[in-house]
Image: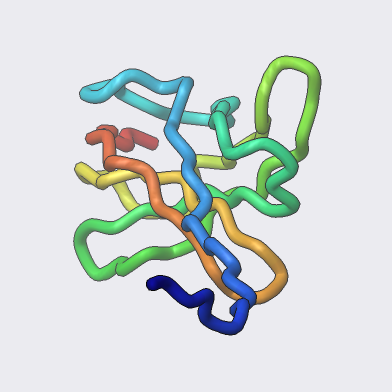
Length: 109
């Protein structure tokens, strides 16, 4: 004998995914640089942030969705010379977000 339980509603909430597509790890940066990220389909917001020295997850650029990816210009002169970890962060309006693996960049103004 078998019975059927009452139905339940289930929502799967996978975190968004993202990756830094342009700059390669170890890159030396100065002046203004273009950054590129990939992100989950339909992602409304992608930002780039750096960590290093006295900075912790400081947003340095907000990406715009284009046919070529999520592009953003970053004026490197907004931070001190040094070595930083650069990441992209994709997020939904609800606040749920996903962070890329970090790449190392060397800033020299």
